[in-house]
Image: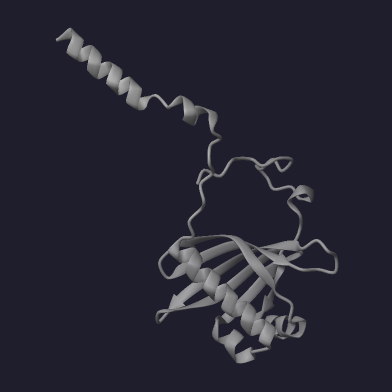
Length: 172
């Protein structure tokens, strides 16, 4: 009986012990999977950008709520109303590429945050941190509020977050 227990114990240890060959190999990184919500809102953001670049006022307006507003870090107490935002964004006809999106679903409200990579006058693209608040009405998602911050993290102070280095490691 003791020999049988010893055999089981050794077999278990052999199965749980990593092989010597595997120990010498570097760990592979996991490829993040795009969630259903990120895919959905990446599509909506792409539709917004496409309408902007084409100068499609009706198409762009159809994606906004009637009381849409934009708030930016430079003037947090002075929202840019829908009509003014449409005018400015269609005049500029300059868009970017959303990256690093996260979406939080709260039923009929979804909050999408991402870095919008914008090509500037320099060779280095600059990023704008965007937080979009989407509202679902009659099955359609419409952009209700957009928040944007263009400052670089290294020059800003956010209470509670040490910005000299990355405060934590992403675990997925």
